Image (cartoon, rainbow, N blue to C red):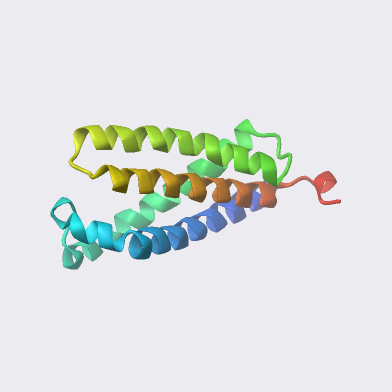
Length: 138
C-alpha cells in the first residue's frame, strides 16, 4: 500500500464529504429538516455531538479509500465514479430501511438518495484521481 497516497486520499475525501454534507444537509436540506424538527436533536445540543459527526466522517472516508485500494485497479476517473456508485447503492439500501423504520418523509429520503449518489461518485473520482497510475496520466 502506498501510505502517502492513502493518507492524502483519506484527507481529501474527508474534506470533500464534510464540505458536501455542509452544503447538502446544512443548506439544501435545511428547510426539510426544519419541517421535521421533532426527529432531530435541537441545534443548540447538536453541536455538543459534532465530534462524533467528524469522527464518523473520518472513519467513513478511511474505509472508503481502503476499500478502493483493495477492490479496484486504479484505472482512472471513470472507474472511481463506478466505485462511488457501487458504494452509494449500499447507502441507498440503508436509506430505504430508515424510511421503513422511522417517520421520515419520502421526499427527504429521495433527496438523501440523490445526494449520496452524487457525493459518492465524486468521492470515488477524487480517490481514483489520487491513485491514478502514471500510465493513465498521458
